[in-house]
Image 1: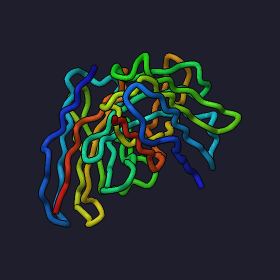
Image 2 (image 1 turned 30 degrees about the vertical axis):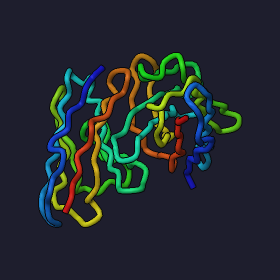
Image 3 (image 1 turned 135 degrees about the vertical axis):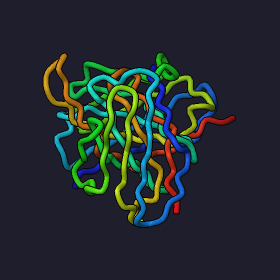
Image 4 (image 1 turned 90 degrees about the horizontal axis):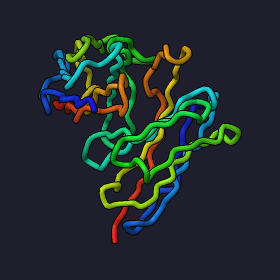
Length: 107
Length: 126
């Protein structure tokens, strides 16, 4: 099983600032099969990025994903008030699919 | 409107069974892979199981193998999760989610879980 470790656990930033979230895998994620999800309090998760860097339909351009093999990054170029949430990475290159423990972006 | 609606959650005792349903509408259900993901309130997401579009291929996280069974009825646009021998650690909100998968085996292209239901709560307690 691939273990995903996200850092930091909490990111304290202000609107307009840049957020950089890390997701490190215990072994290589094949074919860059990594996704990022956003979850706001009391809501279901929302797909932001798949294939490590492809924005899902409706994902604002301020969200970008990068990385390969064991190191992946989600960057939010300029935080908007609605971006304060918990973010999860997930690998789907091997079974079982696994999620990271999440990074909370707080104001 | 594209929608997934879970139902079937509730309070059960350890060792009992429960069957979750996920009703799909607004899209071609039979063309999508489907997943179950669970979350203990205040904790992270845990992928539980998935089924391919035709229902012939399934996969599970180790902690539920042999106890949970995922299935689907494409004629009724419904996904199921049969949960047997429930344990306290199965207590969580259970979400269903869809995923578009293109290509043909073994060259498959995955597009992420782009639509999620609102979740149904399962509580296992004596």
